[in-house]
Amino acid sequence: MDSIYVIGHKNPDTDAIVSAMAYAALNNSLGENNYVAARIGHLNTETSFLLDRFGFKPPVYLRSVRTQLSDIDYDTPPSLGQAVPVSYAWKMLHTQANSVSGLPITYEDGTIYGMVTGGRIAEQDMESVNCPIVERIPVFNLLSALEGHIINQETDFFDEISGEIIIPVSASDDILPGMIVLCGTDPAIANRAIECGASCLIFCRSELAEQYRGRSSSTCMITTTLDAYRAARMIFQAVPVGRIAFTESLVFFHLSDYLDDVRDTVLKSRFRTYPVLNEEEKVVGTISRYHLISPRRKKIVLVDHNEIGQSVSGLDQAEIIGIIDHHRLADVQTGSPVFMRNEPIGSTTSIIASMYQERGLMPSPKLAGLMAAAIISDTVMFKSPTCTPKDRQLAERLARHAGVDPEELGKAMFSRGASADKPVEALVRGDQKEFHLGSHSLAISQITTVDPEQFLARKDEIIKEMEKERAEGHYDLMMMMITNVLKAGTELLFVGDPDAIKNAFNIDHVQDHHVFLANVLSRKKQIVPAMSQIWG
Image (cartoon, rainbow, N blue to C red; front, side):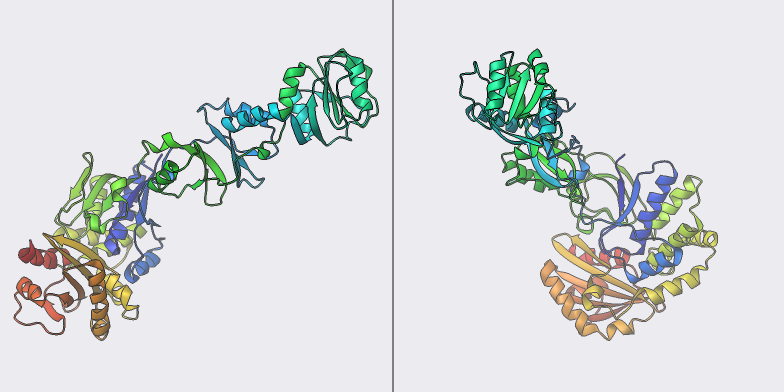
């Protein structure tokens, strides 16, 4: 069963991380068992503190949801060793249920050595007509191909067979030392081959072999039930497959490779079949062009966002099966109807807590504590204008189940959650969201703290970094909200048009890219709507 990834937004805050974890846990507890909480950014200090406090590991980190080779139904033919006879490889090619056109050839440790195809075997067989010579065929391979056995007295003396293959018509034919001679019922030919020092004498469907059984000779004598023509052809099929496999300019892929990149490479290549390797460089299967036509897409659920600019890379290649959010509806589009729940509430985790309640379930005490913390975080200890009575009710119920005090939990997380000691790049990009309002683009970072002065002391550094970020991102305006939990307001740092800030917030004067906004705590319910009024 394919995994369904539950993913929050870029630069995830606590609500994005916890809502993904809680929704995955809810569905798995109901018997789905294939939901996986994921993240598309690094954890901030607050979230790391809370995960440690309640004993959780971070969700899986995803760089992209572009379709990978691991997402498709590639072939899984057997991988053959280099010493396997060509006859066995041919047999395997023609007994595969999926009629594969090639087989991987591997070293003993399972890593790729080469590829063999039916065409390559046929090519080698045709070349043997003009050059009927074999080199160093292991005796075990030869006996297997001929379905024969050695009749010499010293059966363990022979390891490899080499020479030109000949089917003499009579003893007067040129039989030279080192040849491989195929014989029928004529003892003169057999004697001539032994006298001339043939490397191998093969008795084909002949009782004559019994006259030579047990003899001591430097010529390897083999008896087979095959006729002379078929035996001659099967000698070439005894060649170790590694000798004829494609090894130069070999094209192979890894399970982690993205399908569109694989498709580009395949279209430029002349091969029909390509080995697929895992992260240990071991062969796990093969792909052909037809595998790339209708691949399965990764299934994902978006939580705490529904905007392409805030979502995971490769979203257009994924199958969105659900959206759970408390933000405005944005630009994510789906190819078919999906489950969607969007509520005007303070936290996405609150929505998911309601879903637990509706299904008559209570999360574990540890998860309940983490969910309570996420609600407290996103509602800024219930002071945000986005906070509703339902947020507070759900958070308090979860906190009681977890055995924690909401106020103490809030103070602990906000006092530890933000640190001005981080590199300035991390401060600016930590909890950053991008918005598109009409023809304008806006990026807003937010730090929630009980001590804004430690950040304002680095204002010049922060402004300089924001200028750089604005230029790189081509934003019309960039803001950083340093939200003061105790004072219930925001120290707003910005770069861009100061008139936009004045008009949006009815301010007469701003100075040095900085203004204090009293009673402003919410990015989505206060900052973005205010900017929409002048840019919408």
